[in-house]
Image (cartoon, rainbow, N blue to C red; front, top):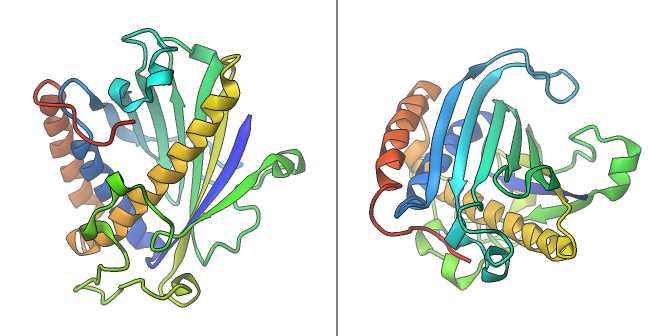
Length: 269
């Protein structure tokens, strides 16, 4: 089992992030879907009576998605999994400011593979030492990784000027450009996403290689996603949750159409 806590500091309030995250997820879903691959949304509905983080959070929005990702996997991993069995199923319980996401591969790896992402969104600059209230045995296993959306390198193929926090300045809020090397210590408002990723893989003799690949993928994904979220601030700032739900309904219709036609879109391995 691999236990990594990613801490992403952002020049936003916790309330703003709730809208921005949902907006960015919807947009990223469209950009990654086409030609038989991408994201299929099966459920998006309210839920109650699911206790999270020791019962502190019990209700919110439930989503169930299938990620058709065959071409986005590295060639060596595709060679290990039979064709047609690479789909990743995602269930998420979003009880903002807390969210629990579970990813599995029921078609092939079944109980041998799971990724659990638990996220707490809180004010501050990443100072919370045990945001997920882990017991001592798990704290001993945890690795903490800080992500700097402005200064951490991104692969050349992922770089876009329009999502570079060093270049973006918000017309609506005046925030940015994040050119100061110590911007995380100075910006206001400020919040942190504490993203605990628990990765379990029993796929011998490739367990270590798959674990290493997963760690790289999640750091890359969290970095790129949050760069995009901040740099689209002026597009979603001022939207309400009701606005977001309408956007999600439209996005689902677009995804259902896009996955059936066109070319494969988005990042590939």
